[in-house]
Image 1: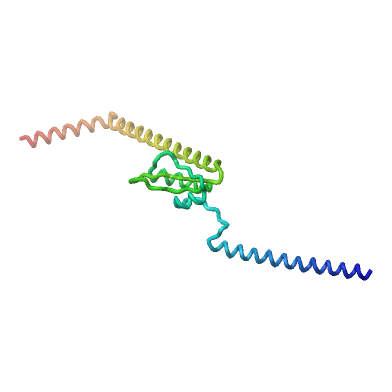
Image 2 (image 1 turned 90 degrees about the vertical axis):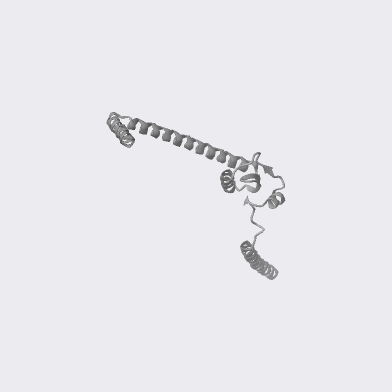
Amino acid sequence: MRVDDEATQEVVQLSVKSTKLSAEVVTDVLKWFLKSKDDDSQFKSKSGKVDMETLHKEAGSVKFLPHEMDKKEVEMISKEFKKYDVMFAVDKVNDGKFVLAFAAKNEQSIEHAMKQVIKKQDLDIRKQKVDERKNTINKVKQKSQDRTPDNEGKTKEKEHEKHRSRQDVGR
């Protein structure tokens, strides 16, 4: 029985040592990870706006939007691409015109981001049309108020005054 007790003790000691070693290894790895995270970490996946060279290196497969766009459009698309972790680059073509290149880990994120951009543009266009209609209605209302019977007398008086002042100047 003495051999069994010694063997059991050795097994227990080995398991305790291995547990301590495992704990030390885990703490060392965690310390290393936290330290490297503060630096430019290799664990970060790039997304958002990058330069064209980085985009080609990181993504490999790069796609371009088919038309040139102005700064406002680029800002709108950039905002959505950042939201959905799409890596993109903006390249200036000529005065005020830009081309957008992009890549993402999956096609669905690009597709979803573009759908959101289209929805927002559609909403902006609708808002502009509503504002234009409101302005037109207000102008029509203003003109109709100017032609009310109350104002009609005032308008005639003003015309008579102008006519009198012209006659006085002519004398």
